[in-house]
Amino acid sequence: MMIHPTLETLQRLRLTGMYEALQEQLQIPASGSLSFEERLGLLRDREVSTRATRRLRARLKQATLRASAAIEDLDYRPQRGLDKALMIRLAGSQWLGEHLNVLITGPTGVGKTWIACALANKACRDGFSARYLRLPRLLHDLGVARADGRYPKVLAELAKTDLLVLDDWDLAPTTDEQRRDLLEILDDRCNTRSTLVTSQLPVSHWHDALGDPTLADAILDRLVHRAYKLELRGESLRKPPVELTAESLPV
Image (cartoon, rainbow, N blue to C red; front, side, top):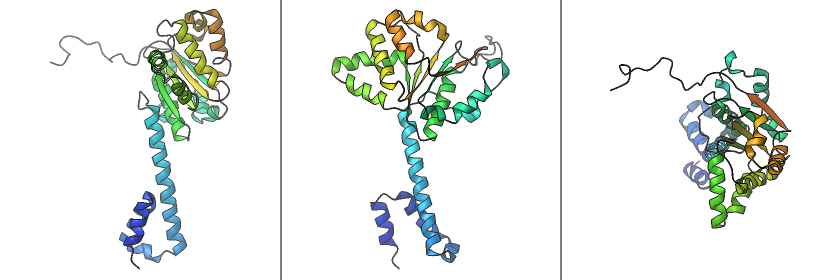
C-alpha cells in the first residue's frame, strides 16, 4: 500500500494529529500487530487531543493573562486569609456555568492579580473563553473606540467572553462617561457571563468610590449580589526576603 498519498491527504485536510500519529505508527514495528480498528482508534484519539490542545492555546492567547499562574500552585499560608474550600469550589469552574462573579480584594502585593489569572487559566483549560484587562486602561480604550467608531464592536466582544477579568478596580477616579461604559459592560454580562474583579478597596467602599450614587447602585447591583468574595490580607509578596543595602545591590 502506498502510504505517501494518505499522508499528503491528511496534511491537506489539516488532520495534524492523525498525520503525526500515522507517521509514528510507521516507525514502530509493533504497530503492525494491532488490528485496523485499534490503529484507527489511536489516530482518532491523537486528532482529538491535538485539536483540544490547539483550542486551549488559542483561548490562552486570547486571554492575555498578566501572570503565568495555575490554581494548583496556589499558596495557602494562613496569613493570606484564603478559604481553601472556596478556592477548591472556584477551581471547579462550576461558577462560570452558573454565571456568577468573583470579587478579590486586599492590599497591594498580596496576590490578587495572580489568583485572578490562575482562575482565568483554569477557565481556559475547562473550555471557557477568558480575557484579562486592567480596568483603567479598558475605560481609556473605550473612549478611543467611541471616537473611531469601534465602540459597539468592542462591547460585543466583551459581552461574549465567558470570563472577563477586570484588574485594578477603582484604582483611579472615573468620569461620568467611564461609569456609563462600565454599566454597559456589566449590564451585557449580568446573569449571562461571569466577571472577576480585583481591587485594593474593600467592597463596602466601592459605592462611594464610584462617585455617582445612581450609577453606582446600577453597577454594583449587576456585580456584587451574585458574587463570591475573597478578602486577602497579609504583607506584600513582592517584598524582598531581606532588607537591601548598598553593599548587597548588584554592581
